[in-house]
Image (cartoon, rainbow, N blue to C red; front, side, top):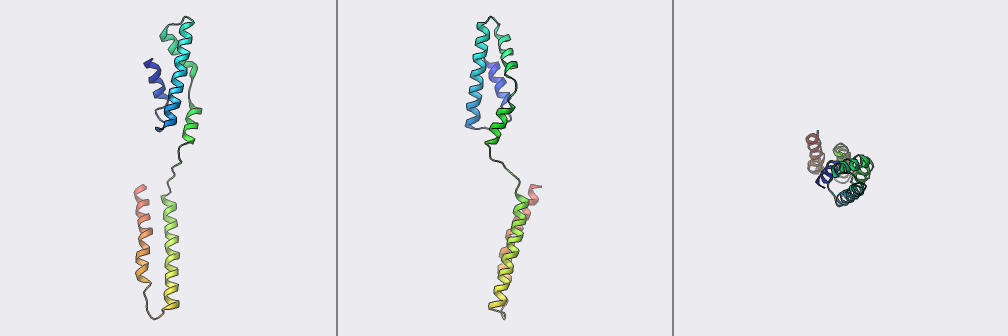
Length: 132
């Protein structure tokens, strides 16, 4: 029943590959084949039985929703990462400036760690630009 296999493959084409998807595809295919055999026992021709089974089966929107719910949600977190890195590096730099002027006011050394800390938001900024 290649027609049934092709129909089931088309129904599940836009769902990401997973073991659960394959198991459900096989179960749907078995149910459709059973329906076809039952219709053929009732006297229908094979082609008519296949078409009736496909029409009676309908769509699989509920199954698609269930399969997609199990997939991890992938959000574009680039903008949030950029904001977090800017605030985090600003707070880190402020801490280093405070430590510098509180403990060693005669020596200005906070500039050196500032350059190192600024790489973080700079990297996030270019990552965000690439994703646009």
